Length: 453
Image (cartoon, rainbow, N blue to C red; front, side):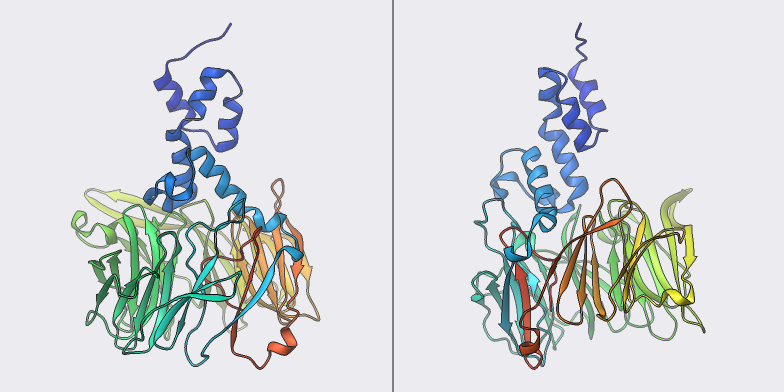
């Protein structure tokens, strides 16, 4: 005998389920299938996993339902795991090496199942910016020549927008199709040290850190100044957002490391708060920072214990607390461990959504749980590891010979599985060239927003 619950309480119950559980619920009967396929439920899952979904409608992606969107994006996330080395193409783009020429993704759609959408990157070249079709290796757009050299750039691929700052501290917004800038501001800051664009629940923003330790937040697309706060007595050197942009962690490295964690709502909606809400995590000699994927409040800091230069990992849970009418932030130490001297000194690290720490030393890739239990080791000697990228699905390692190793996180364990290696066949010939290298495929597009060889 079937029991039919009213739709409203059923939707409330289903709203607590993850994607896999929703699919199981849809198998019960026709009524459950209709409710479990609701756009309201699937949009909520999409917004939780991919924050920029707050800003977009489905027609932009050629899809009809948020359920389709969820599976399409999930397919994209796992595309690198399914790819084969022969699926990739190798491209070189000539650049003027005197200035920054790192490529940034500018493509809106990312990967598609039919391979029809174009992958494109945006690059700076002294006093111009340009976009390039990765597969064709051809320039598709170039800005007019600017009166001052461009020294900083970032992109917002979901909107196909690029943001630049030149040597005169002029910030400009480009849509990478038109010759004229969308918006421009000058004279607000001096000596840019940091530039980053992000999607938040309040809309797209761009952040600028200057030499005086000030943080500026501008609204996209009109570059309206939302807020300005003095963070440190000297420059802000690094900035790290939590996955859903609830928190932002900032570091100043001069003399002694200074840190601050801000509650982003207090910066984006300053009229609702008497002052920016922040706290300090007192960890000396911080080398790298990583927010745990899909866990909004957990952050891990990699630091050095002097004078022996021993690497230490500290994991904190950030909590927003109210005392009377005042909102405060507390950082609670959840786990901590130090590496043994014979385990080496890591240069890069990341964290999985299962709280597994992966770090790279000169000759090894090491995995630990957050309490320091060694889980796995990959040896690279005589090769040297140059760089490490970590996301919720993959770990990517670049080596001194120009090759890239792609690993995937196991679904049912804490370990990594090696998928394949991409070899840079032109490495010897490239050694004297100034160029940016892009590896791409219809089946797999590499890395995150910022790519370089």
